Length: 237
Image 1 (cartoon, rainbow, N blue to C red):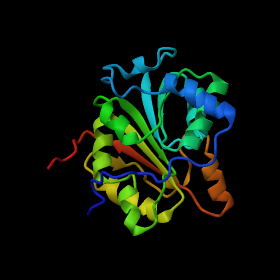
Image 2: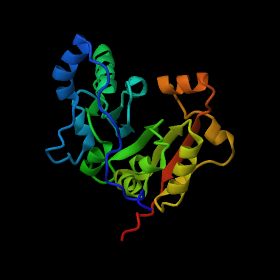
Image 3: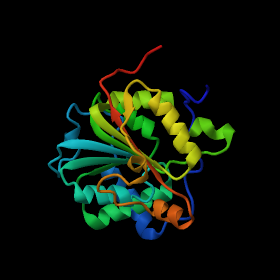
């Protein structure tokens, strides 16, 4: 299938309404200080990306929206370094504003495609990856933009340490089925569910997201998929 190893854009438009002056100022001044420098080699010790925090492990959130989940996780896990990726300008502006308000030192950002960060990080750098309510791209001609595909799972398998976690949340049944089909077929991942409640209940210490709250208000039911990185290496060829 063409979707297996797509290389096109994973997102549509990158900017919505005009930013407020404070948001624009933070995007110009604070974001560059929080942004990863992908033009330089990744450090052998990713914890060194967070000089103001005593970090023991690294998590990556792909598509942070307005950053509410990222900030909540960083606040409740001060010993975890979190990297948040978001291509949409208005979402990143909200996230930067929230980080500025909290003063958290264990967050770094990438204002762009998460695949760039995955390709930059060293092997086995991450303990956890979160993909929360990704755009399902419901039209078939747009399926190549879905994040979950064989190529991106290979990327995740490389940067996740054995035993690491991939957490995916979605309120779209077709995307849940798509995700299960791809991830369960990948040799480097195992679905941890043993009973129905395992995918009906939110993840441990789950702060929720604004999108999730909206989905529930509108009658959509979230599904929470928990995958474990196995010792198996991705197949090549």
